[in-house]
Length: 325
Image 1 (cartoon, rainbow, N blue to C red):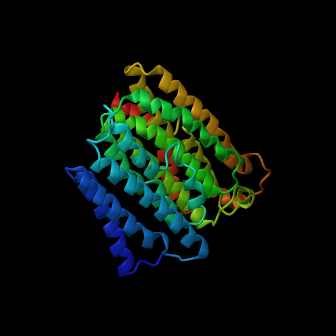
Image 2 (cartoon, rainbow, N blue to C red):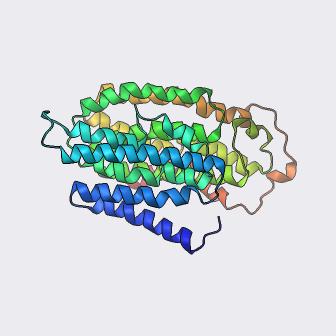
Image 3 (cartoon, helix red, strand yellow):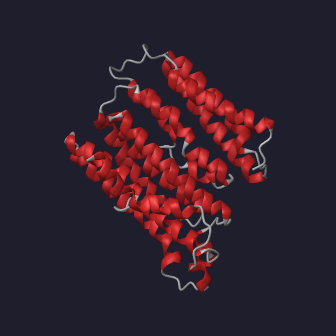
């Protein structure tokens, strides 16, 4: 990506708007931060302009603008709604901004038209402000349980072949975990979000380098054996398999749920993740079980920056035992 002065300006505005939202002392300033965030990301989504990116940007603008109007109406009329606990009303537009259930179907179709850098921003940076705003609300966790029940809709990802749509569905699933994490403990959410962002960045970096947009392109991913192994490890990690760093983020939340006796919610989250494992395994199928040939010189030690990251990803759980316990 060729970063000129205009692009750098919009990226700085994007960072500034998020900081404005999370450091504001009243709801109106937070709302202004969200609006500034919307106006600064629209040019970023169109860095590499095409018909698809313009369509995706239009979808994003309309949905976010509608959610912002709803949020403003609920904030202005906060005292006029004859409901004892009207925090759930303020939460609805924030869920819409996060593309969380039941307002989640716009995210996969929108991400299909974006480039990989924009997809990374949508799945990581754009989630910070709404999550922090949700953490300020005093919400009964049983209400969120109802939202979890609707979240079974993420099985829509099972019949997708596009890598962008699969990562979008993965993002929706992980956002459900993050929602519980931030309602229980801010530090827990920060750890989860940081690990999730790093994993997403590494997966998108490999997919972008080798121009992989669809699952069946994995069949021809024979260019570099170490990259292939690394991508496999990262997919296992985001699935949450135990030796990887991705298991650590889910393990922390499961421990907290057990300490708080929230067994039913924990079981629902785990069942939801098992459903989502299907399309992760579908991604690895073409790399593992298809008979792929590679030349023996790929196994020789080459200069590869990702080998160290693969080592960290695999052995992170053992290191965390040493530091935490």
